[in-house]
Length: 242
Figure 1 (tube, one colour):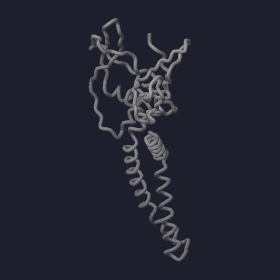
Figure 2 (cartoon, one colour; figure 1 turned 135 degrees about the vertical axis):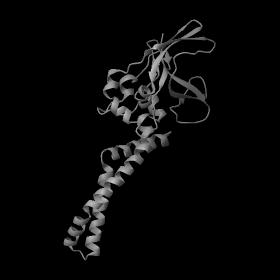
Figure 3 (cartoon, rainbow, N blue to C red; figure 1 turned 135 degrees about the horizontal axis):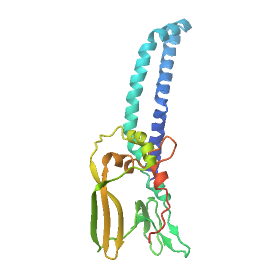
Figure 4 (cartoon, rainbow, N blue to C red; figure 1 turned 90 degrees about the vertical axis):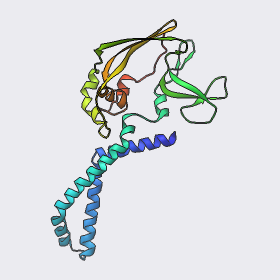
């Protein structure tokens, strides 16, 4: 997992470098260096030759710079897109949602866990009263549904409305999928659920795939103000449900 963490961080840094115009600056420096070499070494160190080469080549090299930098930016955007939209580092995610200890000293684990007898670093910690290692996954665990009947109340006439903050940042969130092949369609959305005795009751409505792209599918994409959807709506910790 340390490799995943380091590689993901590297991708984000490269993406930021490209978004901040780093590619153009780097290529410009390379071109200037090449021109300087041509003028000073191939033309016997004449600075007038440097001026002539630069003057007659500036248009060609400017066009080349724009074309090459655009190509590199597209490649970097496609390569880093998934890591920019959703944090792949499980250890980093699980730290945001710690185990809750109530006033009586009881521990409440909000995340899904499993016992792994093999050493690993997936956010693992020694589980009490067992020699196995308890691995925490970044998935909320609210209720055990084995043996319960499932009832779905579907409201086809109800449409999900995006929160105000998401609407304000809709354009930049949507652009985070620029390298993906996307399309819109009507989807079913889980609005709420509850457990009553032996029954699991689920309430559903409708949403669009585009609305899902700017919420669930871009939870860790950084807004222009430095925040993310996870920071605003899923910051944790999550107390136990009653």
